[in-house]
Image (cartoon, rainbow, N blue to C red; front, side):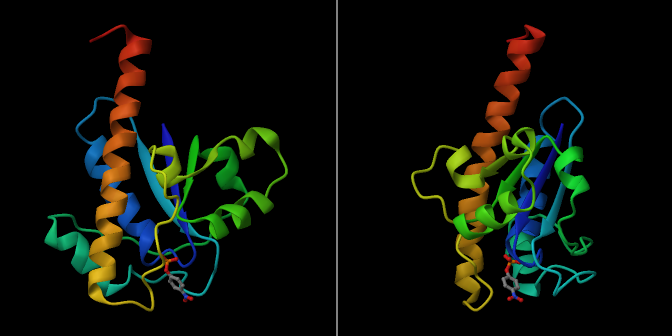
Length: 160
Ligand code: 4NP
């Protein structure tokens, strides 16, 4: 299963989402490919924001090897699920394809995880605490998503 995390710059939120989901899915049998991208090109080639790297490191996760890239049209074909970090990114991503099968792959991360609030707030102009908050919001969503994937796998393999 291939999952893509998408934010604006691919340096703050989606690198955290990529790193966090990778950790949760590593505990589940199966082949997963997790990646992240930004709708914008400003930071292409850059490592994650040092504040995201620090927020992840505090929780024992390394995301410093990631490099930012821009979302590309082939991503809609390649990935099974595409998670967006807020409504505005969600709208922008959906605008990039008119294909109904591709639209069906695109979900707001928090909404997909069952949260009533859909927003992972953009921490770029905020404090270090905002990055810890982003970490917590994404982690809570990824725990639920990993668990849902595991339940789905149990159903299809017949294992309990
Ligand atoms: P991200 O945060 O979308 O979570 O990576 C941002 C990073 C950079 C900018 C905006 C948001 N920017 O305007 O450069």
